[in-house]
Image 1 (cartoon, rainbow over the protein chains, first blue to last red):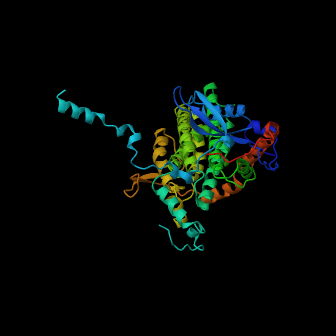
Image 2 (cartoon, rainbow over the protein chains, first blue to last red):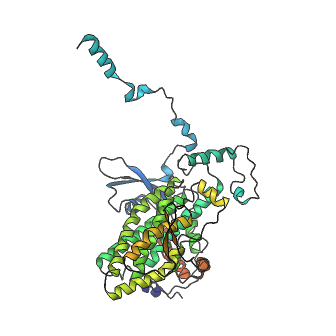
Image 3 (spheres, rainbow over the protein chains, first blue to last red):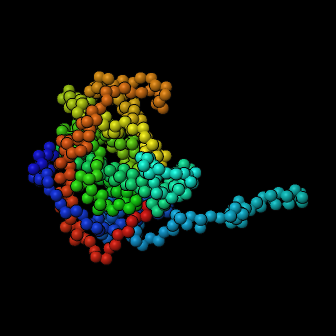
Length: 123
Length: 334
């Protein structure tokens, strides 16, 4: 018998060798990926995961786990199973050639042209 | 590059990388050397995965078990405000365990397996939690000094190479700073209180000093094994360096309160070779006692595990009732 200093535990009269059957697969449920929005106007960003038996409980656990210090105004949960992710091994799909100035704001230098025009035409 | 290097599997350090693809290993090490993080689905050496699972899992268990000696004092904390604060702290610790288990899970060990290894005694947890919190002052010393030690360890590990562990630790460290302030406030209240309160906190400090000195573990053996773990940014600081950092930050704060530490040899000396510029000398902790306790011989080992088993057993029917047959487990993403 466990003779604990903690009165709550002493009252339980637990045996030291209270061996239990091991937890089986799915005892801790599947996982949900949690996305939270820190304040209105922000994007939702991934915060981590929770284990839960259903979406409603996943929301509840997500609020406790990731939103208990006023860090969220809104939370989404998505079953991990339902997320399709790209593979880090395929990181080369994001590679690009350096000559893509045409899709950057910095690729358009109108002031040069304007100044040249002003100078030449004395505007 | 490790391109064509011959790896002798009979050598201990080389056993860590035996059988690994040398090109992938070189890319992996280069990524870490560039300061990039490793993510769950990345290629990684088997030994990297194994060591990280062991480390993160133990860290998670420590949070769960650490909630027990402190949780003991929730109902008896002096005053409503301290009850609320201690409840919040204990809730944080259990939350930390969840974050850490999630990080370990991304490496392929299920939470069920981790819990099974905890309750059968196969996995370890921080040795300090095998000691009881005799009085309220013990709970205050734990909240201040054990959490201070944990922060030093966690801040170091947060700069490690495994992405999910670093992200969990960043969050954990933010919450730990509340624990540290809360613990310090409680210790200061007792130390500046009545003679009875002072006596109580001094006795708790004397009791907890040996476990605190054990907290960071024995001096690291200088081995090529350790060297690889440091290169892989699994181990971020030596046990002795962390202990020195702890002593340098907290011994002066303890002495400030006029409290005494049960080590006549404890003193600060100049040391131009160390990063801190000083070195703390102390009596070598009793490592036989440390080993005895970590192997089950401490005052609370049996109780801690028996309580965890009871909790798992009592909650089992609720979880079974909630489980739906169509659920399917996949490893979380990050």
